[in-house]
Length: 169
Image (tube, rainbow, N blue to C red; front, side, top):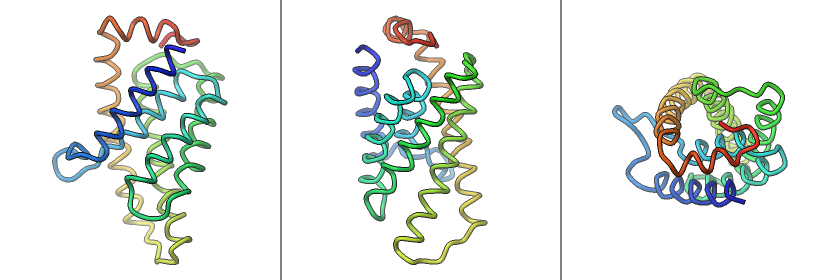
């Protein structure tokens, strides 16, 4: 129960950060705060719970992103569930592995979301530009996510929350 309350709070903070002026770092590199919360769901919950939380965060992603509402629910939910299965299978514990999982989630989500928007809206799809944007956003989000995880590991509240996690991050 504590993990769900914490993820609800993290999703709220991520939605506020995503829709505010804190959406990027220097040079216009975007930080995907909602996908950072989805990575936390994949990291700390079962695949079913992670997929449900990923779908909710995907709906929030759709509402703050330009384009059609709907693909984010399917894409983020599916990717979060699949990554939760990977986390359960290999049981990574380091901050670096958390960052790698986040980079994979962000890059795959951006590519699939852009592709779905191009197909739905029948607009041209430019792969070179997409690859650059997906890689820079994924790397920036991964670095910021690792820093956030390190900060969270040092606080007393996070010890209580993460100790209730089945994987004890």
